[in-house]
Image (tube, rainbow over all chains, first blue to last red; front, side):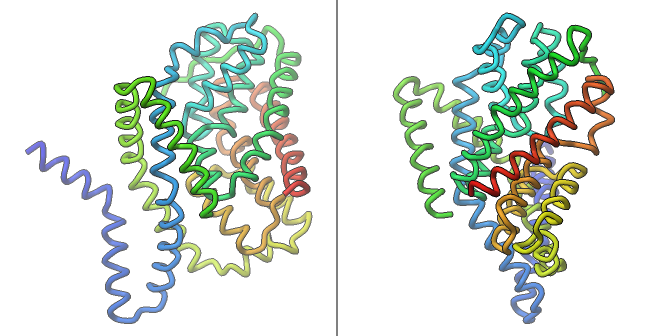
Length: 179
Length: 160
């Protein structure tokens, strides 16, 4: 029963893939031109993806076991200085997902005593320096693009962190938002 | 593309070897975690690739090139910045799209500003952000990040 349920779930997850395969095969046999064009688009993307995605996830897995989140969260308070900045950046780099996924983490950081500056540096690093993101960026846009973009972005969002702390001061508060 | 893959492969290989020498158990755990995450992202990823393949069939590349391509100039830069700021496109859709734009003649500056505003500015998610940080902080963060994105875009266009 349980096995059947899991199999059903996989089937559902891959429904579009299966439909696409059927569509492509049928297009090929009846000589449906748009089908061939769409398949050749897909094929190009797929080869691009498969050439770096497995490598990327090896790196993500290793990063995850060598740098546990709990260890990092201890050292990012108000007196943390440059070490704190480096740590929030590292913490952000370990994560994945869209920027709004970082807001709940910002709340936890705030609760654990992170400075205003470090919270916004964290958001900056999260938005543009996540390891999975950088891996995909290297794959699609090249190493030169990725390194240059990161090097230009980094000082800018550290600056934004300092400016935000200056403007918002001590009244700044992160609220918990419940789903 | 091939060069990048080789460099990336070498980096991954060195990291894997170093990790294995220091701690065999941890390395295997890391590989398992990586595999699990890859498996979880695989079907949405494939669906997205199918979706872009279909969309690209319907949107002629001439249209994209006209608005964001080689001769689009500052108007293209502005359009890219505005679309990037408003919308929210996950990285695994936006990167293939960015690579396609480059192939079709868009400048690095336009592609960079599009990618960076996508990452750093979120008008669609602003209401949620306000709930967490308050109006002032949320709006300030987006405004500063928009300015930063424009600066990065211009510099990328100039340096690439």
